[in-house]
Length: 488
Image 1 (cartoon, rainbow, N blue to C red):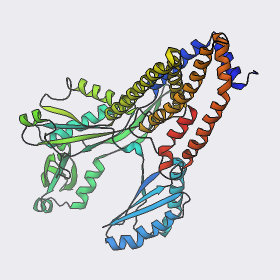
Image 2 (cartoon, rainbow, N blue to C red):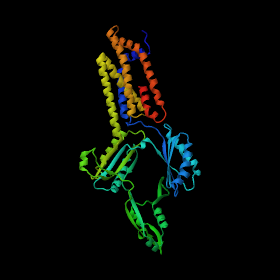
Image 3 (cartoon, rainbow, N blue to C red):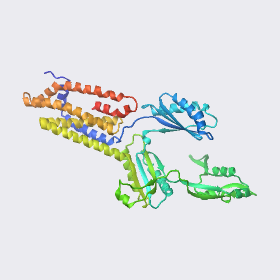
Image 4 (spheres, rainbow, N blue to C red):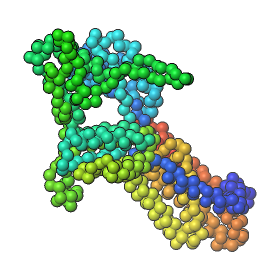
């Protein structure tokens, strides 16, 4: 029988001494790729979005809607690639949310948005501020939530500690942003005394101007000496209430008037804007028995950079917090993880990988029972090698290990096993016939059914691959499954 494509391929690999080395190399590459590929719970979807903020002081919500929001909606709707435009009108302020089509380039979309806004700002009424554009992405969703709570410290003190912790956590390379929820920030209140202001001949505007002028720093020039340039800055920012007290706010009868002479200066927490409390429920009965009430708290919401591994970042941050507990965080302050996206993603990915391994073992056992150890060995080796090469391709395609990409491996398990069983069963039949030596019988068996098996595999690819070209949100969400299955 003349050897065809599949027979020649099988003959080359069977007779080559590098086949076993290649299989080992592929398995090592696949295992290494598994460690390099970031782990996430869901696939990353590229949906360019932006929030636009404009201020229109003194205008009512209806006036803001009629003169700012609606004209801006029409302007933005003309941009190519924009799918939805929403707006919210408030007293003296408008917010417009812009969403582009899925798959649009983020940078180009934002450039088009900026150009259209700047080009049409002359159509806005007098008094409207320049637009403030803030981008939004899937990576803005926090991957880790750390809640600081204490039986002893107030939310004001926790907020100060949270700001210090935030600065330390930001030193970690893959941290994109940190938001602090709850707590009261530090604030200095200046309570002016009208009678003393009249006596010292100062007014409110001059006091405000002096405070603003003293709380500033400007570049005055450069001093060059011996080929070295020194930057010269004038002024400084106010650091505490004591510096504020000694600001000169006017001159009366040739004598300076200090702010402390016409005002009472108080330093302390601001008025509460957000309230965060922490307590234990039925999920943790042991802690609930020890801590029966709720306590003031703040939460650090930490977002990662694009492409960063959520699991590794969470582990790095948690390790950093454990270190800071010994040098910065008081013993009376507790740090509880209220959200850990990296941990949940890792658990689900590890669970799916375990199920894949169990499935391969189960299929191998069934094939061994039906066709002997040789047939089972073919299945046992073909599936992991296929998985390894597929994971290697995931790494180059910038995919992450998530439920969809791993579902592709689950999906192809049946196809790979089916092809392996067809080949192994025909080899088993030729081995039992004993007409040819084992090596020639194996090549002859593969040559018989190899080409139809390859054709059947391409038929499956033709049926699955079009799913990658589905439009809308579902397309990029599900695309790793047909692409991964086709590669395998």
